Amino acid sequence: MWTVRRAIIGLTGVVVLMALSGCDAGREESAAHQTSARNTPAPLPAGSLCDRVRPTLAGDWKAEDQPPGPFPLSDVCQLTNFADPNNRYKISVTVLPVSAADAAEFRKVEERGLKDRFVVEPVDGAVGQDSWSVNPAASGPWLVFRTGGRLVRVRQNVSGEGQLEAVEAVAQTIDSLPGGIPAAQAIQRRPECDRGTAAAERLLEAKASARRDTLVNGFVTCRWGSQRRAASTEGGGPASEAWLGFTNLKDAGDDSRSWVRRVAVGKEGWQQDDGFLAYKITENAYVNAAGYPPLTTKSAKVLDLARAIAPAYRR
Image 1 (cartoon, rainbow, N blue to C red):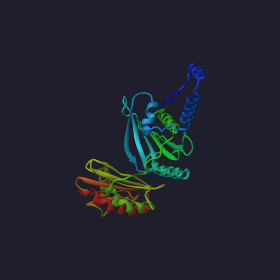
Image 2: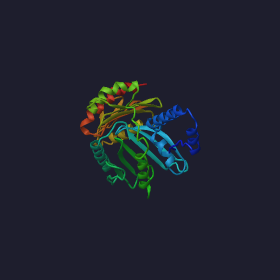
Image 3: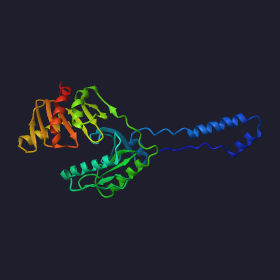
């Protein structure tokens, strides 16, 4: 929260100024200073959305930055309650502006994804226009809404009675923040990811107008985004997300599952029929590659991206 301080001139001060002779210049200077102050815009609040929401929550909370979200390409932070670490809010905001039509398309993508994971569908949300919420029984609820031309997602880690209302309260706080949501730096790149940019843009079918490249434990994750699509590659060692993706697909392939097939990339690669791909570079290096939203027709382009970026992960 922010405290607005007002400078107030007391009545005694005004009388003294009027009684003094030769003070016209001082009064004019004071008036000019006050006019300038009124015309100077207040600085926008700094910090992530979590830093700005934290003072509004009851109890003690820790705000932390999180890895960017892949689709829509988003900056992400998390609020964790010190007294109950399982009580967490994850808040993401899109890097690029989102139109009402874009928001409707993203909702359709979410609806398709929910059919494979939860017996629940999005319903119209309670925060502004173009919003929707999801409240599955087996997971914490989330709410997506558009404010200041950007799409914001607020997700609670735990399920239970009253949790969706708590998510809505956080969303309403964000929607009413003084100064709104500042514009994001569109491009945050690492040179290791550049070798995959041409292939990623063929997958996007557009120039990458947003980038979020990161380095974790010596492995790069590369993310490219346009207004409606995104692409990513993620590297990691044993027990990483990249390793888990490879292990799951390999197990499915070894069981002759119809929705996964072997592909020629790295030492061993497997790809789902929706395009998601995972491969092994060495025994200690694994890579995932994906296009968003997942589309079977883009599988060959995801494979091209995986091949293009592979040298960035060789050790």
